[in-house]
Each structure stands twice: as structure tokens, then as C-alpha cells.
Length: 173
Image (cartoon, rainbow, N blue to C red):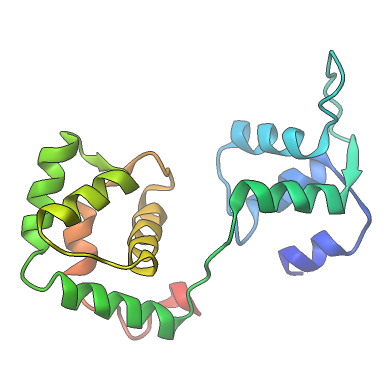
């Protein structure tokens, strides 16, 4: 059963059920402590002085959906065609500038990890202006590897965007 279908089939949802949903597609959260904290944040009332943990505590699905939309904002899902199009655009844009981008990012962040801000700064140094869709795609690809939005692997930029997407890439099926 798909995540949204399961989420929509009842009027109430418990902390325990929310934890299970957060582990599934499309969110695929993996860190138990973060899953529990987010589940509690979504379900428990926040107007009480003390909170006692009860995994059976429930909240209205409509309230939880509203909070999730506020936290996540729009969610972008790439199908094969869209991913290939954006990937090719980035490859063309960075054709002979990829190594330069990598070197500039190393100088900017002085770390093996980058942020969205670092990426924008790196593009300025090489006089390239990607659109928001291209930046989001790059960040998404890096996030897929690191699974940590605060630690996007700098070295993977060259690896990812120096080759075309495989025709049979199962990530987009």
C-alpha cells in the first residue's frame, strides 16, 4: 500500500504509525531518534507543560498533513525523462567547468561537504547561472548519496555530473 493511501485511510494517526510511515517511501527516514522526534512533534499536543511519551497518542490526520506540508514545502519527484533532461542540461552547462567548480567549492568550504549556499557561490566563481530546478536536482542527487542535508559530499559532484545517467537507472522507475 502506498504511503499516501495508508495516510489517507483513517482520520487519526498514532505516534507508532507515524514512525512506520516516516521509514517508508517517499521520506525513507533512517535515524530512529529523528523518526521518533518528528513523529512526536507531529502527533503530540504542544500546549501542555509536561509531555509523557505514549506511542499510542493520536492526532487528526488533517493536522499532521498540514504540519508536514509546512515543514517539507513542495516535494519534487523526478521521473526518468525529467531526471535525464535536467542531468543533461547540467552536464552541458558544466561541460568544461566541472573541475573548476570542484576546485572553487573546495576553496569556499574548506571541507569535504558542501551546502546549497556553497553551491551557489561556486557557480558565481565560474560564471554559471543554473536555474532553481537544476540546483535542486544537484542537491537531491548529492543528498541521495549522503542521506544528510548538512553533509553533501563535495567529491561526488564530479563523479555524478561527468557521465550521463544510465538508461536503465532504477532510481527513476
